[in-house]
Length: 147
Ligand SMILES: CC(C)(COP(=O)(O)OP(=O)(O)OC[C@H]1O[C@@H](n2cnc3c(N)ncnc32)[C@H](O)[C@@H]1OP(=O)(O)O)[C@@H](O)C(=O)NCCC(=O)NCCS
Image 1 (cartoon, rainbow, N blue to C red):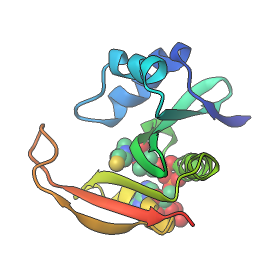
Image 2: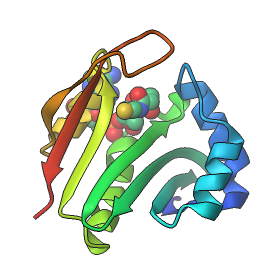
Image 3: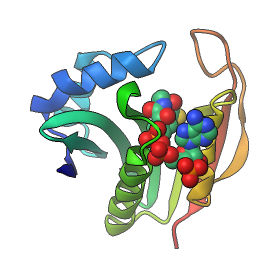
Image 4: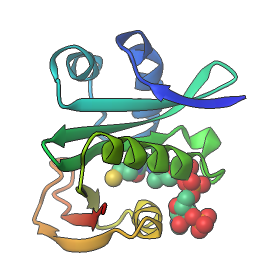
């Protein structure tokens, strides 16, 4: 069985496995722990399949503006629509909590993620030059109105 639920600090260790397998500069477990404990604007969700965390998505919600901080599915489970389900769930929660606009940054080379975001009506809003410190890659800002 697969469920999507709110992430807790007890999940940080498992989420770190997804994180480390997904990004060239992974977030630290401290960063996730702080998001869980100290950030009242943070909403994080995990996909759990047979009691194993296979993906996560994070959101910051400030008044009515939502910003996706990150989304990742473990490489062993990609291409099976878990990312789409998780993203849909996260958007739904943003709307339920008052968001009217959603934005995010994505590497210009990350066409897989961009395709997924476009399926949710997200469109390019601009470029942040040399946003990613590991290789100096630009970020594409994408956004969508939620009402
Ligand atoms: C982006 C990511 C979360 C997508 O999750 P996923 O579970 O593999 O994606 P899904 O199976 O739900 O696919 C949803 C849509 O994404 C797009 N997509 C997914 N993989 C793709 C690929 N390899 N090439 C092109 N488009 C792709 C497609 O539009 C797809 O819909 P479709 O099958 O109807 O065409 C996943 O690839 C991932 O974890 N990537 C590494 C981390 C990352 O880059 N995160 C984004 C940071 S901004």
